[in-house]
Image (cartoon, rainbow, N blue to C red; front, side, top):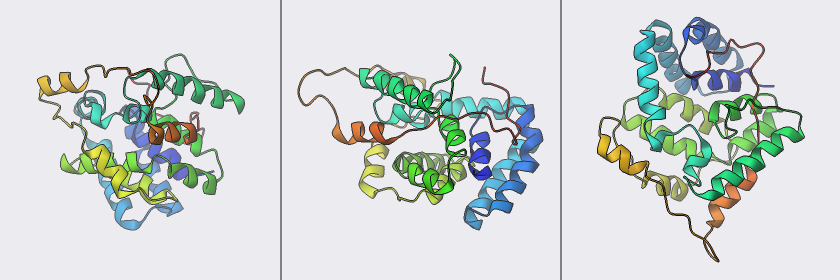
Length: 236
């Protein structure tokens, strides 16, 4: 069981007062486990300092602009695999069923592909298994890290940490393909609207993307609240 993955999960949740209070404990966990390279841990400590000392409303606004308004930074894994196609709905059903097979229940408000949930689940698995599973969406994490680097966002460190923990490192061509997708600035409303337009649904032979379907078939996990890590308030 990895406290580090629980800590990274907490860092990707909507900032609240509980997360601010837990920042010191999270920092201690990251250093005590030492699963993440020191250079990346230093970057995570910078994010933790921002979360602990920043104005809560400013932190929440930053989070929304990054992860809720910007599709290319979505914290839902299947957004980067299926977009809004009908395949995503089936993938959600399959993933939820996988959770239920191991006795994990989700609230009606939770989506199974939400990265913090994914990490909370992996934190309950043996470390080796968790690191192997992280390798499957590692190219998504690498692309998110690069997009956040371009924005000079301290959240970049969380995704660098996930890539570092993954057994299988992301393939350059897979990362490049994701980075070719539109990545509008959160202040460019017209570009954001265009990016969120529904993608056409294709039917018939050849409609599916084998690479993407393969990822969906492999990514498995559900996450529950970490009992030994204070969890921030639910997102509004």
